[in-house]
Amino acid sequence: MSEFDLFATNYKQLLDKSLAISGDSSEYFADYKARYTATSVSNGFSGKVLDFGCGVGLGSKFLRKYLPAATLHGFDDSSASIQQIDPSLSIQGLYTSDIRHLNHDYDLIVVANVMHHIPPQSRQETVIDLKDRLAKNGKLLVFEHNPANPLTRWVVSRCPLDKDAILLSPKEIQAYTQYARLRLVRMAYIMFFPRPLALARPLEPYLSWCALGAQYVLIAEKTN
Image (tube, rainbow, N blue to C red; front, top):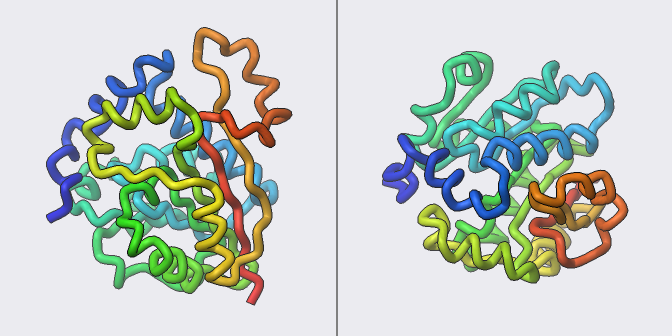
């Protein structure tokens, strides 16, 4: 049994409560990451996508919105969370809590705020397994909380969903992808301005170099 089975029925409410300080809901952040993911592929992308650590399907909902032609699969080790996924998503693709059912030809694997829940001793193995599930030239996108941002650390420390969280730096995830022989495509900081400063959000793409973003994204590619 996964510890997230306990939160499956009220996952979104707990997350929204934890994020209230930012002025935005969990849907805003899921939408943001799905939009960002769509910019990493070509227009009209129709490949196969894995939402790894999909939870109750919040991220998948927006991946479907921005990548409508893609084949979308999801994995989460919480079977109770998988059962909460909207049928409109689950009938269109594979959603499972059994990793053995996943394929090895994904064009895109999205890992959105999942790595900090994986024990450090298992992270390298996880990245290698994900690499093996990519098609040639497939991309791995990892979104993570930025431990250098004090507000991020404060939110994580007070979120019941993150009681097991051990945040990881961009250097750590880069080391895992390098060891797995994935080519680094991009490492960028994202999400700088909370809702009260939303008028400044168009400036965020120009701040991707600044290590104060609330989160960061790493994109790596399988070349062999």
